[in-house]
Length: 158
Image (cartoon, rainbow, N blue to C red; front, side, top):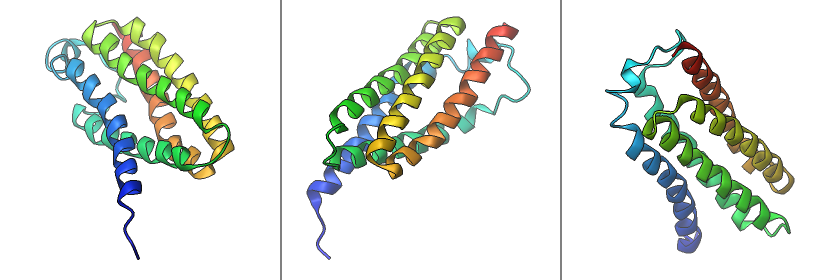
């Protein structure tokens, strides 16, 4: 079996692009966790802080594989689906900037609701091209659903 280095490189690039959204977000997040975020009242279902890193690394990896799958398809809608995917990736990073960087709980809530909607549209578009790619986004949609509820309760409690 011959290794296709170009395909491997494209897959790694797709994963790294998604991970970059996490890196951008972490620039604004890491310094706020022990200070501003630690002082917020959080609901009882709020997970410990250490959970977020591994979950997001996994989700960004799944997102990268999904994007790679769409990129490699010959479907006529792949380009528009990837543009919408890029939009949700930008909103993903923006949420961290607004919520953690600007300390805006309500602003973060607005962005995460929009993010959720764009992830849903992305998943639907991906489904029309590749069911596998769409399925890879389901854990992301589920986690952002949970994060939106968490964001809402943090806003209510603070």
